[in-house]
Length: 280
View 1 (cartoon, helix red, strand yellow):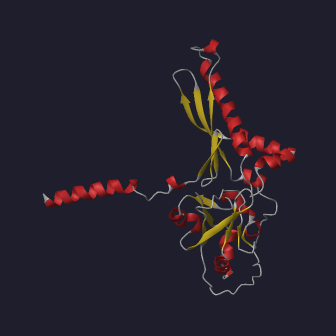
View 2 (tube, one colour; view 1 turned 60 degrees about the horizontal axis):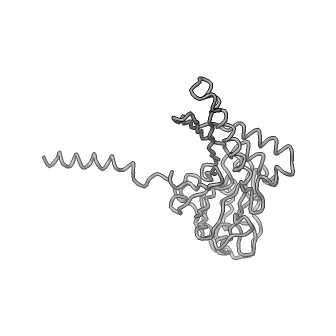
View 3 (spheres, one colour; view 1 turned 90 degrees about the horizontal axis):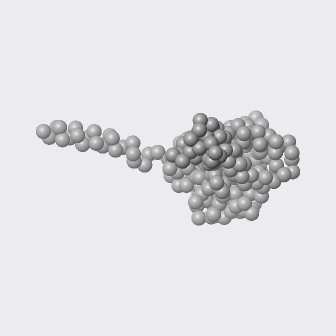
């Protein structure tokens, strides 16, 4: 009887384990924007669209296709609105690019029309609600990321005046910017207290930035440290304040910057965009 009780307890424990805090899915940083949202952790934009058939078509076979078409057009409009407000860096959003460049605007419009419908709901009153998703990585990043982000074979270290007291080699960088009202961007910068760039467009190779984004975002430090992006030995530093009107660039201490710069091997993980930023 005792063995049976132990067996039952073990089974219950194993069933409960998957529901506990081992998954970081709930740690995705999602920014609500108008009628849509940006999942900065996954690099996707979501928007909903709602459509209803003309009243004269209620109950007729053509009602549902008409409602679906109206919902799709509504979702496209909403995704366009979200895309326009995506921060490229601390001073620029996507609409700044599209207003100035007709070619970029046309290409962005084409990418929006290529967004995928990931959910459809047919309501009892004939209304259709759809959820549409657009990937910010790949083609969109290739188009929008600043031109100064180049394909790099290797990265030369910037001469530093501080004493380099550590030669630790890290596999990634986690920047804790909680409490600073920091905001995500496609091309953020990490700066030291002298405004020297520690991480930014000069440190990354374009192919990595395009395919996975220049940095990942999370809501908790623990989730960021566990993220596969920074693998098993990330350096964790505390942000001191933000820089720029978009609040996307983060200042860290000179001591932390020196630690990061102390080993040339650390440039390798920066080239591969192995950086996580923790925001509220």
